[in-house]
Structure formats: C-alpha cells, structure tokens
Length: 603
Image (cartoon, rainbow, N blue to C red; front, top):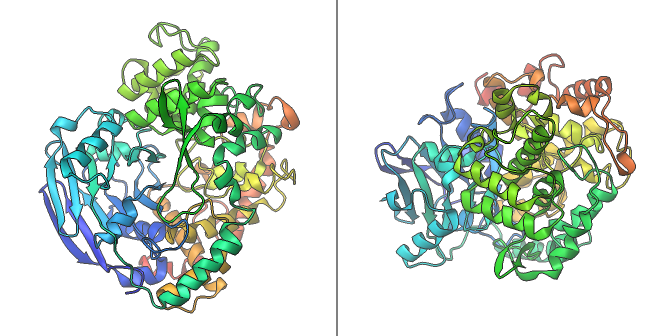
C-alpha cells in the first residue's frame, strides 16, 4: 500500500497487552489518513454516550499518507479521542517528530484502550510495545519526564509524549506535551491520558522510507511546490516572524481579545508583538520536513524558553491585560511544565480577574491573591493553582463553563465558550466570519477549523457582516478536513490543486480537485455524525450571549456586537449549504447518501 505500512498498533492498558492489526484499506480510500481515518476508527469503536474519562474511551494517534516523506510541512499528526471538556469529537494536532518516528517504526495508527492498574509509560518501537512502570515519574513536570525517559533509553532522539500534574489530576484543560515544546493543547486530551494512568508514550523509529508509487515524480513535484507555493508570500510570514506577527495585525483590525473579551485593541500590544520576540530571539527550530522553521526560543532573564505563539500572546497576554513578553513567556513555560492548554488557561485567567473585579469572587475565594489586569506574579500564582488543581484552581481547571456553574452569582454570563471549549484570540464581534466558525466548529470554540478572520477582518472586507460567510466557513472546514487528513500543517496555505500534485504520484491515484473536495466534505460530515450520536444539535452551535449584547470597545470594532437575528439566519444558511436539517443541524439522509456515509456508517 503506497503511503502506509498497512499496520495498526493496538495497546490494551488494562491487561498490559498489545497486538498488530491490518490497516482498514477501505477506510483509507474514503478518509485518506490523519483526521479522517482516526475519526472513522473512533466512530466505529466507541459506544455512544460513554464517559470520556472512563476506560472505555480510546486514544488514537494517526499518521497520514505523506507522513515521513519529503512533502513539506507534513510532520504534524492528530491525537483523536472523545473530549472530556465538551463530550464532542476531539482531534488535537502537534508538530514535533512523534508521528514520523511512529511511521518509521512501522505503525500507521496507534490505538490505546483501557486503564493501567498503576502509572505506566509505553515504549514503542518496530518490535511492538513495552509496558514500563511510571510510578517514579508521577507528579513530575513534562520537560523532566522527557529528559528522564530519553536518558533511560539512551536515545536523545526518542520522541516523547507526556502529561504533567494537570493531566494526572484530570484537569479539563490538560494538554499532552510532545518533545517538551509542542502541545496537543485543546479539549482535555491530557485528562484522558491521566484517566488511563498513562504518563507518557515514547517512540523510537529510525530513518525509514515510505513506499511511494512514483518517487521521482513526487520528488519533482515537491521541489516545484516548495519554490512556487510554500516559499511564496502567502506563507513566508511563518519563516520571518511566526505567529507573533498576528498580534499587530489583529490589534489594527480590532480583533485582539483584551481584558476578558471586552476590547478588540490592547494599549500595550507593542510590548508582546513580533518585534519584541525578535529582540530576544535565541534559537529557531522546526518540525520534520519543514522549510519554514517557524518555532522560536527566546531569552528571558537568564533562561532560554519557548517563545509564546499568537494565541498565548493574546489569551495569556492581552486578555489578562499583561503587556510584558517576559511575563507571558513565564506563564507559558509554567503551563507547558504542568501540561495545560494556554488558550483555555488565558481565557480562564481573564475570566477570574473579571469575576474578582465584579465582586463575584472575593480575595478569600482566590486564596488571598491580589488579582488585577497585567499583574504577572498574581496571574502566575493563579496559573500554578490551576495546574495543581488546588483551592480555586480545582474549580477553574474544569474550564469556564463548569467553573461558572459552580461559582454561580451570575458568573455564567462571563463564560466565553462554545460547546464547553474556551474561545481563542480573535474577537467574534470584530470578525463575524469567526463568529460563525466558532459556533459551527465540531470540537467547540476553535479558530483553526475555518480561519475566517484572515478573509474579513484582516483585509477589512465585510468584517461586520455575514455576507458570504456561510460559504466561506464551509469551504475552509472541508479543505482543512482533507489537509489535516494528509497531515499538512496550517501554515502552508495550499488548496486542492497542490494536494492533487502530492497525492497522485505518492499514492498512485488519479484524484481530481473535485474528488478531494468530496472527501473533505465527507470527513467533516463524519465528525458531525459522531457529535450527532452524542446528542449534539443546533442548540449546541451557539455563541456566548455577551457576543450579542455587550458592545466591543476600542479601534475599528468599537461599539460593535453581533446581531443575533443575523447570526441565526447565517447559521440556517450554513446548514442549508451543508445539506443539514436547519431545525436540528442533523445531516439529511440524501446528504449522507451522496457522501457515501449512509452505507459506510450503516445509518
């Protein structure tokens, strides 16, 4: 089989057993790999309505047909599970080298099930799995565990996924940290690992080759694509600046989330922007097979730490009023050590400051902290309480929706989330395309499913209107579905044409652009059907009430809010474009039939 080894590694933690299985080639035909293939396996294997933190839940790590090849920006891979934060499908992506090494070790998919009787870590190689005692690592920070496992294996190139104390204690915002610097951040994947007593997974896979149909043609196409597409103006921002360049763009566009989503501009944005990152630059590094090299480390006092990405600069920075790059980097490093998603963390920190200033939380409630906008030490102490799940941190680590419900006293109105997942760093009131994208994202409040802000706010085109937004959201959701199934990074702004040029010589196919559009749409609807089975309907495609009632402050978005009636109309139009029932949001039988899902899912 071209592009794959044809093998699945299934791990049973409960009984400390593993086995190799043949890859479902019929599912590869329909869903490609990565996101699509992993969700298809999860749909088939999970009973509906299970508790995401029970042994019944599964973790699937999936590679794609381009993983391990010279295809540019193909080093990313998804971790797929049922989210404990939302109850919805969760596919969370990471760079590093884990997916590639897994592929080189001979495994296309890793499926982990059950619950280990004691803390355990997995050592994966081409020989299979060794179940190792992780008792001595329990309670350790992610970076320390990565170093210790590599030293124990005597292999500094082993790729390690691990959770920190937040995951061990099953915080809903717990992340899985890859090789110390990359995160499967959103949706609580770290809590799922913690619920399974699974501290870490290490894989050793040495330089291998992926069997391709026409390697010479593939190599030629890749060379041309790097020159004409990857290294074009559409992508070079990632090489020159990385995501911190978005801080100034978002601020000028009135969409930089600030002080608990009350403003679209931040007065100290210049203190956390790309220029400040460049001033402190210590090192650049990349994922596998990436010519853009977007990752950065910076100098903070006497330390070299990971440079915060845009979402962290926005949520931990401007959303908490913290206009100091050192302070944001300090909290970012703390979050990585504990294993916490910084988007959710920053949202929670801003939410807590707001509740304190509104008098909903008292000083006693928050452990005596002197909370205010932009106070690094108090915010860092609160973040540490969340990582430890101590005091108020135990409540806050559940995410803003659950925390607001427990706190009461009107705290619910300040919870900025969709489906239980905290909103990212782009103001929905300043980008109505993002408003619709957030509401319809299958994993909850997510900016990556359809990054509409670049198509309206950043170019000042109908940013306060839903005109053409349903079409744009659907187009990007379908494209990203197949892009992530190929395991191509977001930072390559490719289209179906480039995917055809990669897939056909690699896989021996004669795909057309229309073929790939259909597969992308099929994958999006597959994820939708997973959520439908879990009970999700139109009522779950909502926005926080503040988006409709609380005008934004500052910049070109000053005084703006989303008109609820127009949002509901846009949502209905989006469902009609998708071929879903406008009242329930459930895909119509004829839509499932057209996409081949009715027969495949036995609906």
